[in-house]
Image 1 (spheres, rainbow, N blue to C red):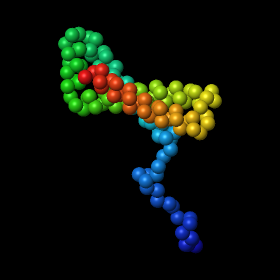
Image 2 (tube, one colour; image 1 turned 180 degrees about the vertical axis):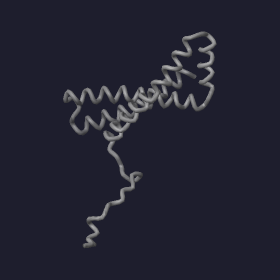
Image 3 (cartoon, rainbow, N blue to C red; image 1 turned 135 degrees about the vertical axis):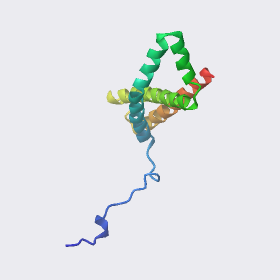
Image 4 (tube, rainbow, N blue to C red; image 1 turned 135 degrees about the horizontal axis):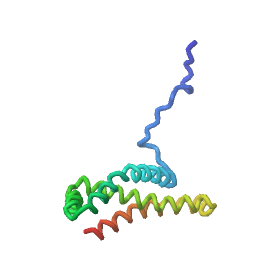
Length: 128
């Protein structure tokens, strides 16, 4: 038996056109930054270990940063660390019922998103 009712068909959602609230963006960013930080652990440990073995190892690791891709990855990891830190503090405060009001939650999510970007920009200015 066929059901020709158009209301029961699957709905196509164009994810590019859906506007997420700032609180959702902060939450999704927190998850993405956590995954990126977890995935970067082997690379960061390898660099630390290699750079501490000898002066030559240090020079080899320092030479890696002349590569544009490594610089970009470093910026992404820097953003991930900054965003994850600030979002983590925000979520800890939410867990103890601080900032649960809608307007306060929006402001804190906006601050988290901005501080993640500002943290990377400050690092770039310091390193240049």
